[in-house]
Structures are given as structure tokens and as C-alpha cells.
Length: 280
Image 1 (cartoon, rainbow, N blue to C red):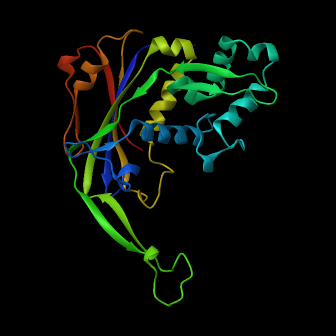
Image 2: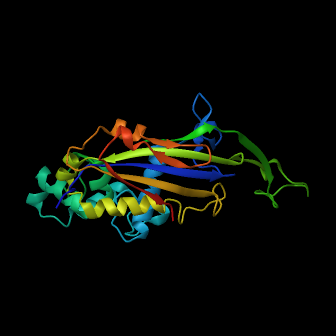
């Protein structure tokens, strides 16, 4: 059974002296827009959702190398191993492969995936695209952020030197958002695309729970435990498959202040069911 009704949602995130999403093209400093707003990319948010779903026992196709639970060393290896479970006749039918990859991996039936893999030893070439029903925007801070540049010193040389002095590689930099900053992001779940991938109401609940616990098991030196927090998730459930209002109108009804307080302008979206949930 696929998704019953269209869903829209908003997520409010607090960063407290942390680097929510480093920019590799800018020395791993926290991402910012040209207007000075902090940014967390949609790719980073989806990565955290995948990790949370995997923690809950869901099968995930795009896994991090250090979190691989099937021994596959690449997406190609994972896909080829899966194709070997299908018959030779089924591997040649894109519709059969499409249905099977969506049933097998939750992130595929949620976010979609492009499969363009060469022929393996015992498999046929695969080239197909899956459009997922769950779309998520990048998160942007409510106000411009300030960034702290912190110089760090390692206690030991990385390489042996001829002297007892510390070498230059013992010096480094860390970057973080100065103080507390509130970010907000929006998303939606399409019933039309859910029908194609088999994404269900149960899957939608799993996505909701992943959003509520987005930063569990995500600790790092850039994001120490407790420095990243989901404050609120606003979950809108329309009364039909096609929705009472456009996603843009629903998202505009959500207001977030610099302290992370959330309000919904119900007058602009009368009759639309919603719940405001605390992050866990």
C-alpha cells in the first residue's frame, strides 16, 4: 500500500558552537550563503536520515564506508550482489529491477537513485533512474552567522623530525558557528511518486522519526555530543493525495524566530492538519 495523503514538513535545528556542515572548498569552514546565512546542504541532511534509518534496522543502499553492513566496498558491488539474487530473465527487465530495488532499499524508494552500472561477472548492465517521493531542501539559518576560527596544536609530531621541536604539521585549524544558531529546512512527500516506488504510510512515519532524532549517533570533533539538536518538526498531513495547498504555501505558513520558537499561520492554510513535535 502506498502513501495515502500528501505530506509537507518543516524541521528546526539548533547548532551550539558546532560546525553543522563543513565546506570542503573553503577549508571545511561552516557553509554560508552570499548573505552570510549558515547552510546545511540537503545531501548532508539525507545522509543523516539514511544513518538513522540504518540504525533502526532498515536496508540502505547508499551507506557510508565505515557503516557498511553487508561488506560491499562500493555501490556497484552492492548492486551487482543484489542483481545476482534475480534470475537472468528478470535482470533484463527494467520494471522488475525497478520494483525490486525499491522494495529492497528504503532510501531508494524514499529519495530515489540513479543506477548506471557496468556489466559485472555474472550480471547484466543496469541503467535506470528512480525518482523518490521524499524531497528535502537545504537548511538555512534564521539570521546571519559568525564563525570562530580556532587554532589547534597536536601533542605529537605526525612525522619523525631531526630535532625535538614540533614540526609544522602539529598546527591546525577548527571552525565552528559562534554561539547558537537556528536553522530551518522544509520538505514534502509526493503521493504520485510514492505510488511508483511503493513508499507507504509506514515509511513516512519512519522518515518522521528519523527527522526527530536526526543527530543521534552523529557526534564528531566538529559536532560534539549535544551541540546539534532538532528543536521542532512540523508535520502537515493533507486530506487528499494531491494536497489541499501547494508545498510553497504550506512552508510559508511556518515562522521560526532566532530563538527557535515555531508558529504556524493556520489562517493561510485553513483546514490543513498539522502537529508540532519536539525533537528527541
